[in-house]
Length: 378
Image (cartoon, rainbow, N blue to C red; front, side, top):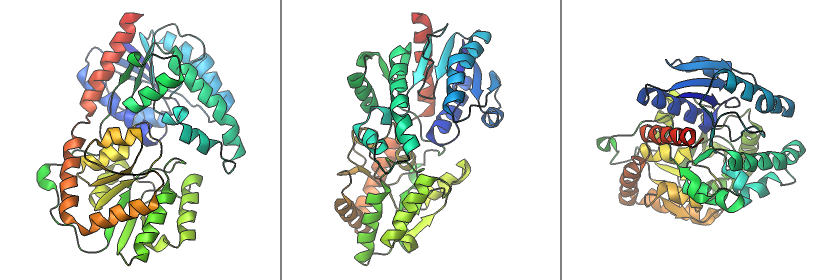
């Protein structure tokens, strides 16, 4: 099978992890598969695999450049490659019907979330972002409706898409992905006692308007006011305007001295950061998958998450749930876990077991099955 993989706008974050991990496992498992990878030159150079043909593209973040790629260049390139299938992991497909079937991996739950929509329309958002949001959202809805086949990472997102578009729920394949850049920890490696010093709370994620750092910051301030010795471990790149705004909010709350921010970290550094914390907190209000949750569970961390359908789905019975935006309950939950080593260790074991339900090998197997089904149905 010849697959034209559209990753033209992928640069960083969870989408980059998905690209690298899925391509590697697909190539390892399927000797008959040949992938034509449309991505930036930097990413194409990084994926040095046999049967992956690089198609370096430079798509600027401008409406004109993006529309030219999807309207003209992508259809031409896929046809020139004699592709049996276009597999797009960018959330978008061309408006016009392609000459071959398409598989779309939808990774942006915000386009189907009331909460995210409200955040994007907030008057404090830059005008450019607010103006662009509506057309982008409509384009994504059009893409999921016109794709030959559609995959998502959670049943929660599949349900939302089916409710808001003409796509049948039965026609959406739910394919959970693996644990990001980290490897599953062995049960024998779990710590029985935490290290001496401040209680370390991790929220290891990139910035985003849905990440709700504000609630976590208020909880941390409350815990500090109670006299608790703690540190909040973050990975926010300060050059990102959203991250900078979050850190400015932490400064306004007077908790900067409690924050240990590692900034943007490389893939090889992320495991050590997870392994350095005692508790993982995930207050995000909207996620397509929430890969940091899966990473934290793979490393055997007790995990506390905001009450959303996708967060509950991912952590299963392993996580502790708190009401969205409820800093008081979050603070009380963290305090209880700081004081109760036995509960924290029990939850860590549950996390480790739940984390093993997420596998890149399995994700690649199911993704290839979706590819085959799309081609066979054409």
